[in-house]
Length: 401
Ligand SMILES: *Cc1c(COP(=O)(O)O)cnc(C)c1O
Image 1: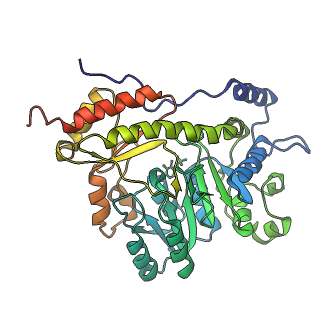
Image 2 (image 1 turned 135 degrees about the horizontal axis):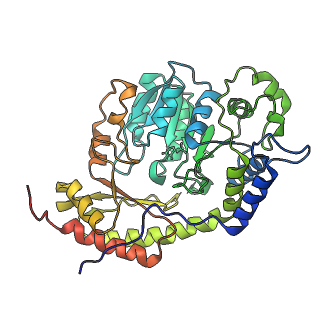
Image 3 (image 1 turned 60 degrees about the vertical axis):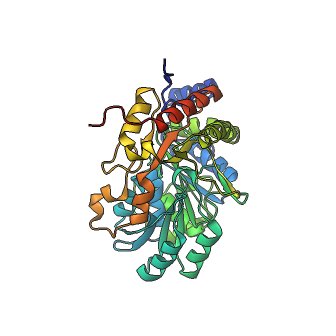
């Protein structure tokens, strides 16, 4: 009998009893809104911001209702006005083009290379020819590009760099946490990311003006003084009447859920990586499955794993996915022309209008497969997944139609 894998790929770990108790306590108090606090008592949302800023080693932090909202607010805070061009690597998820579009920005999509990183030559060329003054860099699926090169290109062309760290919360490049290379960083705490509050986002920056604009834009009214990780009052005085209200404030319940998880993040990263390493070494030994060698100065978080298929699996990717799925292994494919679940290819964002073709990105994604690695998987689960993928990758289609 062929092995069948039984666990769902979307099951996260439970919220701790201690956090549940804290959430219930907040519910009993009835003060769920972040500005509804007793005088002199910082709200749960403000405490989260202070703690996350310290953890991320950023000066300022803002909690938002989603990662997508954090990105929209970051673009506004950085000064993107309707019609402004925004560079963005083309391999990303729908919240990125959505955020750029929402603020009236015009995306200039940049090719990726075979390692899923931003293609430096294309970035260099488009930074020069497009005149874009913003770059929304998505560290897609946790693959961090050469940040020295990216920062240099941004400096030369006076480009404001916004990092989308939805998949790199806690990851490092040359020992520095992802999100500390650009001018603003955005994180997501949606269920499938590295902290889980259902929905939620965080924005960090060291730039006082960007921070003040972001706080006001999140919908602070004139209550911004209740935040913990913010610049001085005079910075707010300068910007507070110029930032549109996006009503994207995080509430105290979700802030409490995140405060309970932040102290566990570091050890969870190690737990993800233990699982990732089993999958990686197992799949590396398999035929028809190619795992890209990751750069040594990248300390990634193995919460998902990408591989390229070749041979029979690549000849009919949908058939390979269906066979793995029939055995309980849920693999996503980034190459499909129709967006499925969370995957999307840049040419499916029709609202962006006509886009210049990106042949390399399409070619790389055509063979790119992806699996989630939830912490509810045991090390043995990972071995079972390897076995199933390895078997199916070499199998020819049974009944070619
Ligand atoms: C999840 C995600 C975001 C933010 O998503 P939200 O669901 O809005 O929190 C942004 N970029 C990428 C690449 C993501 O995967």
